[in-house]
Length: 312
Image (cartoon, rainbow, N blue to C red; front, side):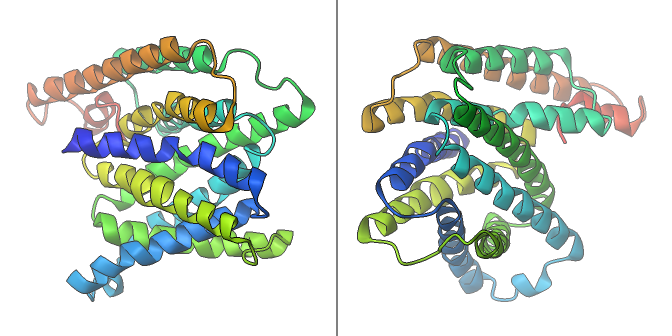
């Protein structure tokens, strides 16, 4: 079941870039309108079942849960603002690859917090990023406009890493439905404020625009983001972000088929490297857990035991 959820999540987020690029290119929909509606609609959809099963659950959210959810929502809102705008300036393949570097940002954030990653985890990250380079090539930033798009996508990746880390903290005690409804709802409110401040309309679009927003919401938000938020309850944020790297070849393939973008020459080699890197990271984390289980609880400091897992 976990593999199925991960596969659905990859398919969902891989459709995000091509769908957003197609909607922005063919309709009058603004970047922040896409971010607002995908979160607002998803929040309502995810809140429904929770209200039916646990009508008092939202009233019992703790201060800790709310703070981590709010941090995740702020990071997600800014992530969308950066990533969606980048798709108007650079290619889908380049924007997707750079925004998917969130696993590197997570590793950096964890290192800054004192986490010591096992060498297998760092090696796996390096192999996977070699796959990213193989897919995108070295043609990113080929013009000033594309360079700006690349920088926005890179910032979006850092914000996505923060969103994943904060979500992992919130999901320690929150159900998927409760967390996603709260996080998506607050994100939508924050995006609405950004849209008001920048003068981007949130309504008044033609039928094609609304259809694009609906497709993005169902595929990328309800299926993609929610699947990965579900996995955060059982997987480390770093491992989840590594799986998200599979979005890169998926988005490149979809953009090639539906948008006519040239498929990067290294797509298939890059996919292979990403898979190998992911396997190395998984093996490294499993060996770390096995090592901890073989030791008595008092054999080493708690900080060292946590750090060896390579997780948050």
